[in-house]
Image 1 (cartoon, rainbow, N blue to C red):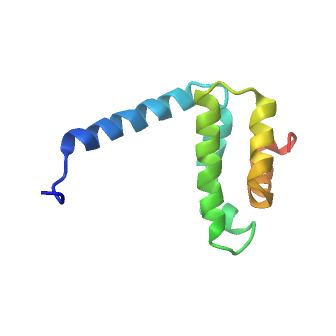
Image 2: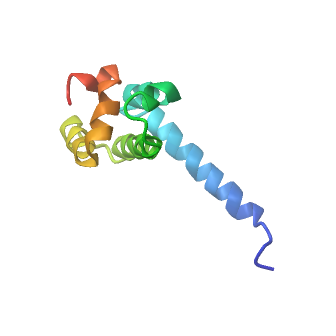
Length: 102
């Protein structure tokens, strides 16, 4: 039946997500990732009242996680944040490790 849950697949996805998180927390951008995770929703909402800001925040989290896993250098991470746009740059300004670089 297509509606049945495949627990093996779910557990495999959870294991993969945990491995990605561990790699990120042990990677070169761990501090940035932690600072992003610690941003309060109110900090994000202060940027603009648009609900899409949360989506941009999630994109930043995914970008930092991928950059850490792929072992990108800092300049490449900064370039990719800038490519995300103005909201991402404003979020980066709230992160002490990124604020001076953006």
